[in-house]
Structure formats: structure tokens, C-alpha cells
Image (cartoon, rainbow, N blue to C red; front, side, top):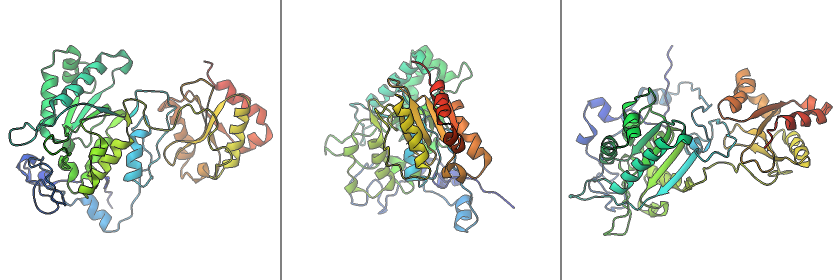
Length: 410
């Protein structure tokens, strides 16, 4: 008997790992066998980073042999669902169950920051974006000096080795004592991570800062569509690895707009997904995810999922008592049945879980009765209330009083 554990949607072994050679020794070959060109012959970047070819793995041999598979569906890393929502939709067919956060926290989610940088390409170029690198280092310094960040660990992911080295050098040459202390791991916390796309698998930090480095070519007015390993076969798996390293927040520093990625010029799935991910990020502000402060119950009377009548009755009763409620709150298959808050609150205050068919369908006692407790201990909900159908039928006034009683006064 044996167990093979892994994730076929993330990075497999590469030829670099097998041969012991470095990525710098490997030639990048495009879909037509021409280095640095996309499938339509558009000159993407003649000095693109080499992307080692993927090698067969024991995991894929097991999958292709038809051996029984068991999916681990609970996702625990993200403190905000938006951090895993893109991957859940594009790579896991919505099969991951993540935990909704109560919202109201601007320090979580996915955010895009536009900078006016320029990628120095060509034979005389350094293949770096100094403006973008400086912006990343400045943000690191700001966060380390901000007490509200609470010692959050930081990581930087770049799309090529040269940009990685530039940012590493800027950090090491910094006069900021906080940056130098974080690099040295002086207090036993996680060091500042700086890695390129190919080497970040297995790492995680509270906040991940991306620096793609690329920009529109001034001579052609177009954005070259070779994003290093991301544009190679299997690039979407590399993207999946990179965007799931953060526990709290992803910051995307880009020197171009998502619309600059002309999808008519490439069939690379990684490039298509990269544009979609950029488009999904909040620009200069609000994190992704359900609106934490709607003005009324959403979709009252339109909830068609099993158990909807119980949800709607409880939500409507709370609204009639002056509360704000939302049914089916969340971005994954696991949802808070009813989220409740007092008017004017910046975040949800009570997560209500009911005993409907969805609760019954969870396969283990832990899934049914233990996991919802993580809404309080891990995701920071002020209160979690379980409501059983018999109790609601027999004593609605007591159930509503209990919910309102645990709502924090603001």
C-alpha cells in the first residue's frame, strides 16, 4: 500500500530539478520552437527568462493510472476568501471550501497598484524595472514602520531573476534599520522572502508583493506577451502557486494595465489567466469579496438553495428588528447561512449556521460541528450562533433574543 500526496494544479518537477542544471542554462522554446516568440510570430521578448520544461512526476503517473483519488477540500491558509477565490474558480472547479471573513479590514484581499515604471529590455538592458522595484521596497519599509501592520511577514515574488536580484540588492543596501532587521530575522519572525516565480512553491507569508517588471515597449507601443515561465506550457500552474502564497493580502505592482495584455496575440493559458487575475484585483483600495455592509437583506425571497425557507425567515425577522442581514454569505461551497450586523457597523458581527441539507451533507462530525468554530477562532467573527430548526419552530422569540444579545454594541 502507498499514498501519493500532491497537487497536480501546482508546479510539477522540472527538467532543471532532474538534471541539476540551473534555469540560466536552459533555452526557452516557444510553441513553434522559436525562442521568445508567441504562436502568432509576435516578437515577445528576445531575452525572456528561460522556463525549464516540466517533467513527469510520480503524482501524474498515479493519476493517469486511474488510482483512487481523495481531495482535501478545506482551505485554511487565507484570512480572506478573495486570496483563494481565483484559484478555486480557475483550477479547482470550485471544490475548495474556504471560510468567509467578517469584512471591514482594509489590510486583507487582493490589491493592484499602478506604477509608472519601464522594463529595461534589449541587448543593452538590465531586464529590470527600477521604478517598480523601488516602489516595492518603499512599501516594505512603510509596512515595517506601521504599527497597525502588527509585525506581518512579507514576501516578494518576481517574474524573472534579474528583478528578484535588483529588489534583493535594494533591500540589503537599504539604510532602513527595520528592513535590515527583518532581513536578518533578528526577532525570530519570518524573514523577508524574495524569490522568482519558479522557486516560491512551498513558501508563504502574511503579505505577498508581486513585481512582474514588464511594461509596454516604447518603440512599438505594445506590451510584449512573454511573461517568462508564466507564458510557457504549464504557466497557469506557476501562476496558481504564486497567487496562493499569501495569508492576508496580495499587492500587485504593475507598470501596465490589464487591457495592455492583448489576448488575441497569444494562446498561452498562463497569460490569459494572468490578465483575468489582474482584472479581478481591486485597484488602489477595497479588497475583493462580498460587500461587508449592504443596506438590506440580499435576495430575500430569491434564495433557492436547500434550507432557504429557514434562512429567509430568520433573516427577515432580524431585519424587522432593525438589524442588517445577508443570507448565503461567502465565495465558496462553505457559506455562512446568515451574516448579521447592527446598522452602521463596518463589518459583520454574527455568523449564523443552521441545520439544513448542506449541514447534513458534510461527511464527518468535524466538518459539521467542528469546522464552523473556525469562523471565530481563525477568521475573527465576533460571535458564531448555531440555530436548530426545532428550537426556531418552538421558540422564535428566544432565538432572536439570543442573536441580538451577542451583537456587540457600537
